[in-house]
Length: 321
Image (cartoon, rainbow, N blue to C red; front, side, top):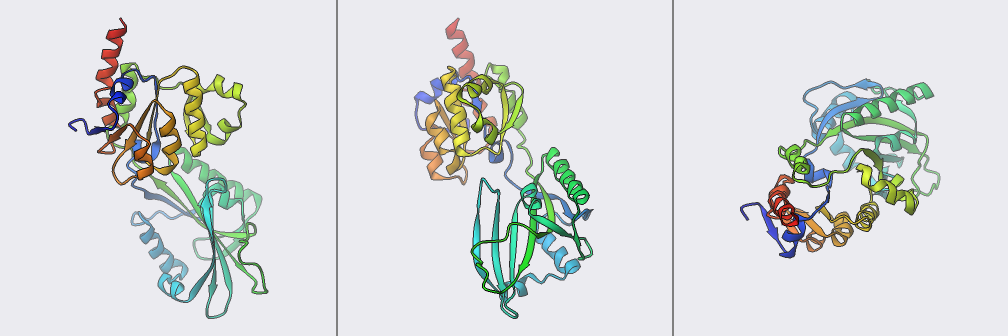
């Protein structure tokens, strides 16, 4: 326990000493999983207000500047249909009826580039709606790319009023919407994350150069995956299947693989690997039951201090000699 690790399978400590690859989940493992709004755009205008550091502050700004009374809106509206978030569309939506005049409004939120693609108009910061031409859309795309390059998660919000003429409200409009705004959210790195990644100094393999998205890796042929898997450093926007596929490829290439995980989406990969490392504070039971070692303080730096980590790796190297 001094190392903040609870070993569920004793053999995992020995195996950890021979690990050649550690696949690390980013959110909540290398980062704090404490989201903070650092950028807020309405149309092409950056709202530079130091007080806008969370959702409540942004809603307060909207009430003051756009005339949005959130409590009154909730009381005077009825939810008709909810489109739940899925990892392919990367967005979620809802249709709401205003009780006073029976008008129906569709709202979407999600990955900024996906929501922007559905929009043909946008709100300016003074609350005036304007048609969006291709040049303005390109400018907004550049804003999104700039925030993403600064390691920010970009979430956009869009709206549309639809006619009350018997339209099927269970099919939410996905085009012709009005862009309401974009927020950039930062998830700070854990204090010991940099040092923990330096575990490569103990002989643990840290993949080389390539950065790809999960969809790209998924669409490779079997031969391409086996050829490229050793060079992949970061796999962004990866599904549970993508993670599992990567683990399977690494094991086929002879690697001893460890994986960190904290959620249900990590469970398939945690079951498949040689050593499953579960980040243990406020995480899902499914992932925990699939793991071999539980990291009690949620700090990836503790992985390097496990008896089978840096120390175990050195012992393993001495035994090989």
